[in-house]
Image (cartoon, rainbow, N blue to C red; front, side, top):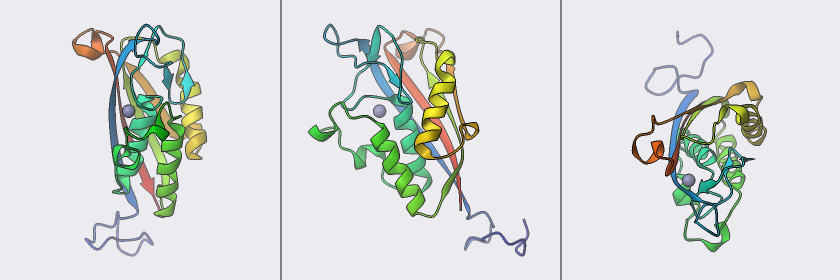
Length: 180
Ligand SMILES: [Zn+2]
């Protein structure tokens, strides 16, 4: 990229200061649903999925929403989700995690950036993510305010090893690209 191509150049002269990348990661323990266990209703990317286990957490424990939120906050060098929303705050008990994502989107917008695209992976043995993929992508895109074609979510198993592979936990990774 040359210096006179109209793109905003950073002080480093790299010419790519208009782009920011962010990464988010989250994990939640899975347990049988309350009241037998501690599991909350299984919600992923804001989409309710019927499953006999659910994530354990202070909020609604939406692992994908939390990874996406942290990726957005990370891209603008902001505080992470745990700093913004204390898991000891009674106000966040059972909280719909869309509230966290919306706050991250607000901060991204205030920083002058918009989301180019987002790619996320959810790792768990069950339930299968693929049947719910389109609904999850559409919901996250709606919350961010971008087209669903800019949001990608894929599911993977953990090959039946370790806590995730034994169905005792679920994790999510997300990368997001911003531009201004
Ligand atoms: Zn979380």
